Image (cartoon, one colour):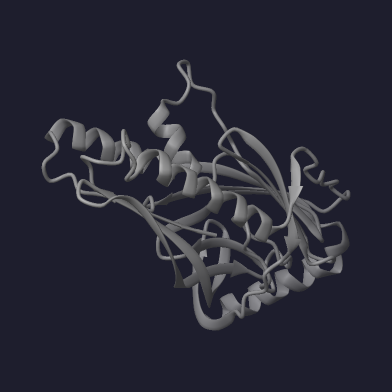
Length: 277
């Protein structure tokens, strides 16, 4: 183990000599559980199986992270399907990040997220959230890289939507504690990671927030030339809080359309959806 650690530090030192020009691309794959719980006890077994398979598929995505020393761009790799996604899959994509693009600028401590919400393009610009990482001694290998464990905790505001045959549709806001586990490698001495994750002394190759796991499956490094990163620029520019207000307003409209009013379509089913950023 001591020999492996020394080898890792040596590699990190060698890369650090040319850190100015380190760049490349990393491929990540996600898997996990959708934040949707449905009462399917009374449902036809075949339909229940189909819904569960669709939920699992909605979480199986592939992303590409393009990076240089200070910037990164995290974007979903979208494969076009012959018939296109069905209505149910589009609805679930709304709660799993859709096909958004996430840009980080570490030197300026800011991010830009290009996303769509109910068919409208938004450009969310705000400061990066700095997690209070605690670096442990545990190590493991991911591909050809020796990784070290780090953990963090964050408090987030979540909106829980529920609907049933007695009460119709309603939502409530609560605070939720998220425990995050990340694995980073000092063999790539950059503080980047997938999506919103960053801030460790090496590239994050795996992260888990208790519901979703993001795992790096391929890395291509370039130390000969500086890689230019293009920041997203299409969409209505809003802050993170403004976007939260917009989504909350839309949820309230959904509650009115599908909930307790005459002709509402929220009755006859039971489900819960938890949304948090």
